[in-house]
Image 1 (tube, one colour):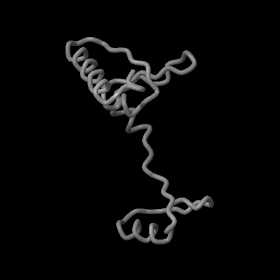
Image 2 (cartoon, rainbow, N blue to C red):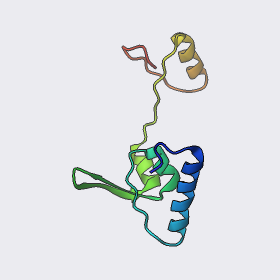
Image 3 (tube, rainbow, N blue to C red):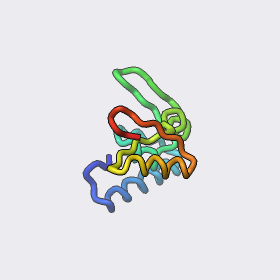
Length: 99
């Protein structure tokens, strides 16, 4: 619902949905922008090809579907790896040159 809106419009839509939910209303939103839904929704239902895939709290969904790693690429790959190790991170180098 916020794709293509300016920042003021995004803020207005978020506040409207939160106000309606605070009144005890159920808000149905269809969106592929999970980052936006994480900011506004407290419960999530995911339907794919007509089947219920998830019916859970937003917090549980994020916890269950989050990865505990990131991919990094740098022209100074060795230095990046050294800094990560100094800070206590574990790194794995791939064939594609990413950490």
